[in-house]
Length: 56
Image (cartoon, rainbow, N blue to C red; front, side):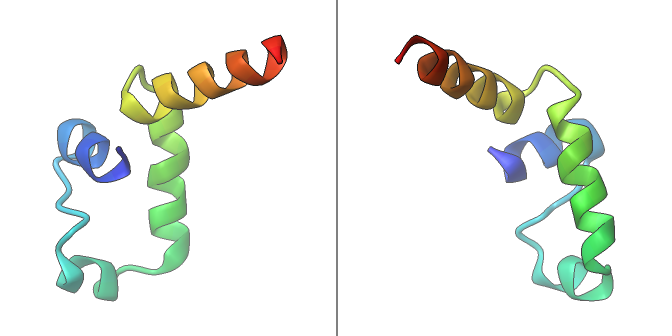
């Protein structure tokens, strides 16, 4: 989900090892948190899990 959403919304290839080696962790964390704010796969999955937990 994270890789697919990053590609769709940021045009980033997170499966590109060179990209990840060149960037600091805070850079990746900011992008991951940003993806929670868009209506992407990651957010929809987290919302579905939250609803499941709330309903037992």
